[in-house]
Length: 118
Image (cartoon, rainbow, N blue to C red; front, side, top):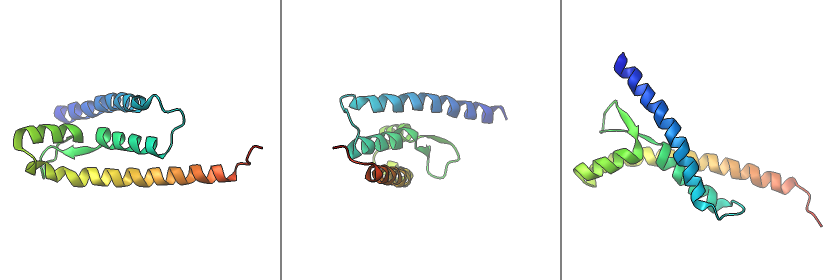
């Protein structure tokens, strides 16, 4: 039971640092005055890279942040062994793309309903 608690504490600590990393990722485009679709796509890619969990090995019950798994697996085993991570990142990207699309549709719907200034 102690190992399960330590694993949970690790994920809580990672979540805190991932939120800080995502905030820093957003600050990379500090020069953008009005965020558009490109800015939101950049944010989506950052969120997928930072927040996607991946099993540390195929068929493993232990998970880790995806970008760390890809980096260490690539260094240890090469490119062929990293391919099992692709579906995890692809599904996270699809979920994020749907969420981004819904958000942008809501934004454009609100913009369409606002009166234009003369």
